[in-house]
Image (tube, rainbow, N blue to C red; front, side):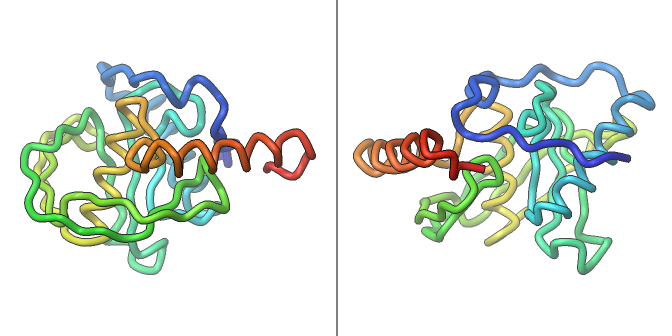
Length: 171
């Protein structure tokens, strides 16, 4: 397992939808291991493969941030099949470090996915887990959490980041 660099806002790879996983092999397991290590080191509650430059529909999530190993799970080729309610809460992203903004998401989601072995499963998420699932699926669809903000707010953040990039203070 290895730490991998996290792709930041401005890299066009983050705007492209990810490809479905077709092979459940040692390479996929190595990718997932690297993603888990990278997510924990960041630290974050979720990481999509596209955030490390790999355009596959894979994400890892652990809302306990490594405190409870039973909370870690892998989403391969996920599909959200049910959304209920609304929850407005602050959200951030490892690809947009230093920015937290309120985002409205479904309060409860059900996701169907495959595990790293290719076995199908379904998982219900509420609260932070529901938010993390939706956030990572957005990444796989080529969207950042900023796309849920008003156009004005998104523009202000992008201008701030561009200014930081020019001054050399953007990570």
